[in-house]
Amino acid sequence: MARIKGAVTTRRRRKRVLKLAKGYWGAKSKNFRTANEAVMKSLRYAYVSRRLKKRDFRRLWITRISAGAKANGLNYSRFMFGLKKLGVALNRKVLSEMAVNDKKAFATIAEKVKATL
Image (cartoon, rainbow, N blue to C red; front, side, top):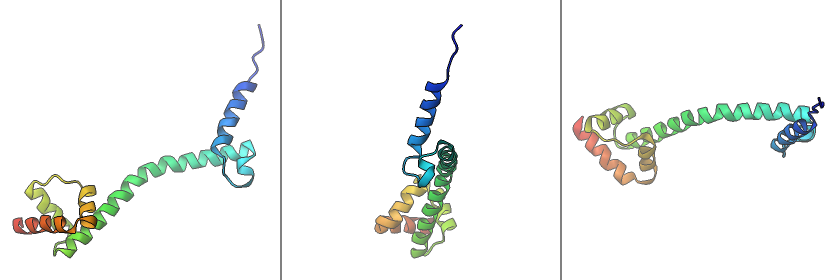
């Protein structure tokens, strides 16, 4: 039976890792071992950050809505409670965009919320 050598598979794996490490500083882009460590760490950061991104954006949207609500004489929690009571089905992303870019429409919604409270 013929002996199987792993050179092709190893080269393919190493080339893939070094391609991912392209642009890293110093030996991290040249040496396989250091490049592999750096790539594994960066892939771990990327995985975690994809989850953190959702939290960060939600915090940003809430901050923007809160600022818009305060400008119209309400606090965030009363504003959101009023929206729920009104049956307005706008999510935080859309509300934050309105608070930043379309202040007139946001003020109209805030007035309707004030009327229901």
